[in-house]
Length: 452
Image: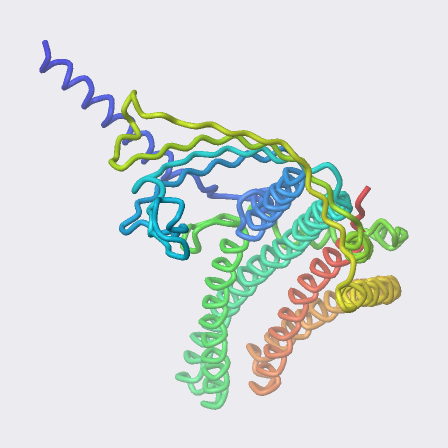
């Protein structure tokens, strides 16, 4: 019976380990859209986790400040052993001796023990009241920074996601172009072997093929790095395979919506403005804190203690006598003169406040400039995308015409190669313009993010 019980426990444990291992094997997503990637990163990325920890630390700091004004209870215990007891001299006549003489006496016991407990309560402290306000403002500041981190994560993931899609598109294009060039090369070799084409035509295609193969190797390397960077930013192990369900075309179409240009920036509600504004509040409270240090501080306390004395270690025996004592009181501390130290500290805090106010004004103007710049950049990338698409379509037609001419023997291999190079370049520019537009839209939206 006991053996069966052990077997059952072992099977339960083994099952738990297996289930736990299976869960750990499948805890990371295998495919994500851009929106899903952003949401996952907001929960699991290193930056998001750090931001939440900062908010948690600020909350604990706020309570730490609050607790300073609440009752504090401290206890202490002491044990003393006099290796050699101190000697006191008393006049000799007290002990029957001659006047003018002294006799050495030893008072007390060799060992003593005591225990005390003290309750203290702050009654008034100006710096404590300011500290409570400062803790609340610091929590707001940390929360604003966490929201800024979330916006930065969203922008970063958008760029990383689109970059991985771009690398995949370029890889696919290079592979497709290589297949096309290889077909042309095989046909040209046959024509050359039949004496109907020059060797230079074969060599031109071989040069183009080698260049395209080099670009393909580079594109594959960039694709691997782009996926690893995306995984890192999302919060997934860099070697995990992740399928991206959105396409570059879909993201580009979404980024091409012109309604974004009609939105106005609510300057005083933007995240960066709120952070700078909260910093001004912090500096103002720091200035008030330095001024409050000139106010008196009043505290109350209650103490209860007990002591015991003995020539041997008998403190835990029932016959040992313990002598108790207790007291209650208040303490007042009134700053009077500090040789100008408090005045200097107050002035320094005032200068820091004025600096923060000046920086807030500068940030207000800088935000407006950044918004105007980002709007103009977004418009330029929209126009660039349209132009790049037209260029690619034109380059495709030119390449096709030159391919037909080359195959029919009425076009030169040099012209055909130039048309191919022009097409490859136009394709890359088109896909890169898509990435630029997607990234620009994300940055513009980040500037428009507001805090209520």
